[in-house]
Length: 414
Image 1 (cartoon, rainbow, N blue to C red):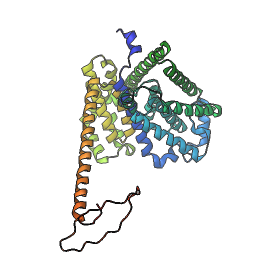
Image 2 (image 1 turned 90 degrees about the vertical axis):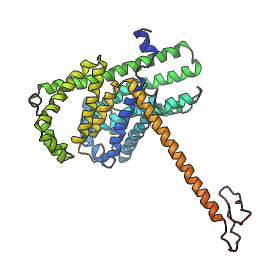
Image 3 (image 1 turned 90 degrees about the horizontal axis):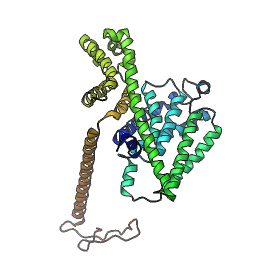
């Protein structure tokens, strides 16, 4: 099969896109849960970026956000809850096509409401939320994949009902909306394509139009995967080349300054220890520039690419700990995951599956042991002590209305 046929006949990188899906959904969910007590100050009516300022800004750049439809607290809570639920369901892969659309709506709505809230990772999540909409990221490691494997093909009730409700909501949103028409056009195109897919799946599942839609879906997925990869390369290339032009990076002292800023020192003792080592600061500074500039050029050298990929992920973990930027680091690690080898992902998935199976087996054994001890204790307490006078117990009714069974030897309730 040549390359032209492969990009329409196969879903390339299913494990990579699944990891990217789980990575960004988990990062956004982690952020929303972490900032739950501060949500009103970040994106709500109590924030420093007032509703009037956000409305004026969005009106100028035509950004998409549903938070500006209303100033009420109830509407804000509903949108925040939608962002939480959609991220959680996208993480586990339940109705991934629907949840990817709702995930994008939640991300864009909150971030465009307060554009100055973020640490750089929000920009990556912003972009990837749009790109994920084009991918078939639920083909593996998702509840959708498990449902498709366990249940034979048949008429789906939940999917059409869900898309009908969302179509009504999209119609209302289109009527009341004032900005972000590009996103509405994209959402309507997605909704119409899904409606056509469902119609052909029901009327002609093996016909040529249905096969054509499947090929187009594969093509969009592979194009979205390519865009994600190119975006990651652009992020590292631009970051590296801009660093090369900076005098602090040329001198090898750029790392020293953030390690001495109170805002970026969650562990002051550790930051002071690293900042005191001139050689370490120089090596890490130059190493960061070299890795970021060289990474896009190593994609065709698999072994070198894998080594640099591991180095960059370790670097992001260090940034999360030393500089106190966990969400930025998680977002970049999730983006880096698109380049992970399939062999490694399969190995990691097998290990996780074995660990989950072992954990479930141990939990089942523990429950069985507890039940056995409880049963043994109940039998022991039901036997009357020697010389004791047996009393007729009070008869009670079980929850289902049936009388309890009596022990014929002691008259106790079994």
